[in-house]
Image 1 (tube, helix red, strand yellow):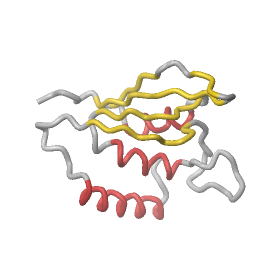
Image 2 (cartoon, helix red, strand yellow):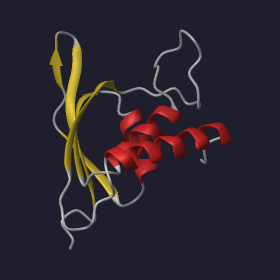
Image 3 (spheres, rainbow, N blue to C red):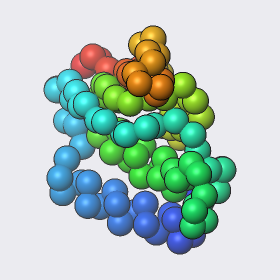
Image 4 (tube, rainbow, N blue to C red):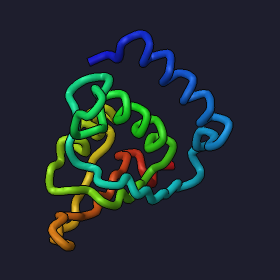
Length: 126
């Protein structure tokens, strides 16, 4: 599903800003990142989230997250919750060259929390 024009323009500006911060990989390095995406679970199935709606993350947010993740070969994501909708949508947006594995989800004070490891299939190729 292609983003609406306003979201596509925002993503383009986001990509330009990321280019200045994290240049594209020259193919000789393995780029690894870790990111706590705080309660990464549910997803509002819309490009914007109405005030007061839950979950707050939406398709736009996942596309912005994907733009960052693509800058790396391997990304460890903390605070993946039991509902994997946002994670599965992220991998879909990243494309078929990406996969993930999950740790077991543990119950911490009533919150199910785990970690995900995202990796590009080209990881380690020279």
